[in-house]
Amino acid sequence: MQRDSGGRAGGQGVALAPWLFVALLAVLWSATALAGGSLVRVAAVIDGDTCQLTDGRRLRLAGIDAPEVAHDGRPAQYYAAESAARLDRLTRDVPLRFVGVGPKQDRFGRLLGDLILPDGASVAKRQVAEGAAFCFWFADVPGELADRLLAAQQQAMAGGKGLWPRLLALPAPARPYVGNASSRRFHGPDCPDAARVSRRNRVPLATLAEAFSRGFAPARDCTPWPEARQTGHPDRSRHN
Image 1 (cartoon, rainbow, N blue to C red):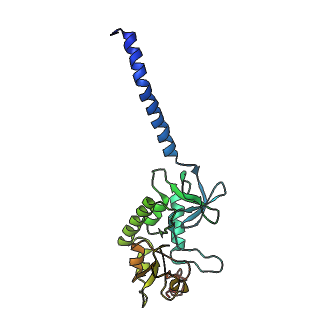
Image 2 (cartoon, helix red, strand yellow):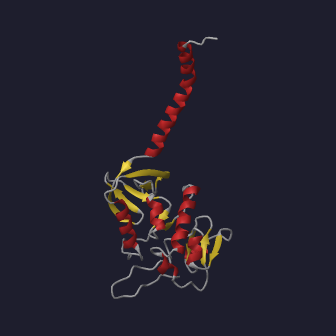
Image 3 (tube, one colour):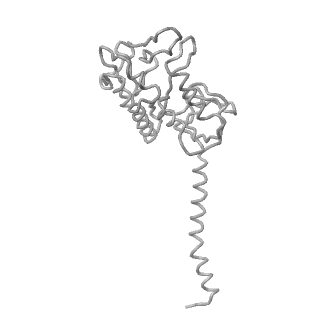
């Protein structure tokens, strides 16, 4: 057996080469994972779940929804301004990382994904955790992401964060809301869309607290969401 230093060095070189190769691959993989997409900055906030990037593209945060701002002749919903303001505070003048989710583009051509803060926190989850947005399930949202967002929402509800105290204090309808197990949306009991939910998918939801805690989100039409407060005028809750 050769025991000279040159032989030992040669043997170690052959043995170490695969380990060095694997380590190099691990470093490269970690760098790619940390990059996780492109670095972006927010130019303007549209509402609590949508913003425009400095490169002109619009981004919709995946897996969440926020109260609607006034548009197309419709008044703003309760907490729309506060939700948008929170998103603005989170993202203003901050270098962010865009991470695509699902198809990475929604049916309106907007980017679909999340923004990651410099500390690694998810902007979408932060909005939900602060009670500024709520879970909005889609089939192409990964289950692990949907579960994390729902857990954050349940904690925000229990802690009375943001929009939840007033929303959950609204009176329950005379008959349960109608949830759709397939779409995870719910309708007012008298909404025409409620009558079209099949018996197989129909889920009765007695209160808003039950609906939201189970991961259902209000449908766009016949929504129970109240309008924003108008100065000198009482709120008008749109229960059906």
